Length: 102
Image 1: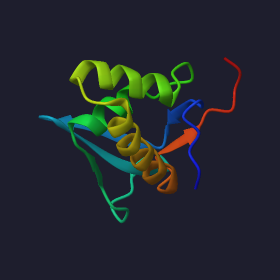
Image 2: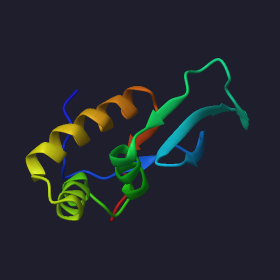
Image 3: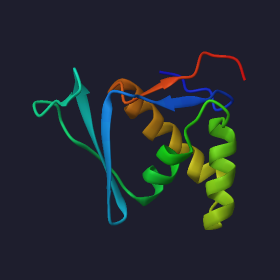
Image 4: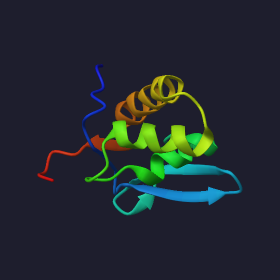
């Protein structure tokens, strides 16, 4: 699956999200109830930063640039990790590409 960093992505509304220390735990929801049969997804500190920045107005390119500046890490390294995370979150339906207008 090709990920376009010029696109915006949004978090699913069908999840319960809880921050625990420096991690974020995501549990899919079915009919308003946590789906205990679904795997629980955990994000590390960097994944949490990406998750929090996902919005209809922030492209992946901007997210990558912001995190790169915040941590003084090359944008290329952050881009590789971010694309991998976004691909996995898309496959699990925890996020979606934003299709609206900006």
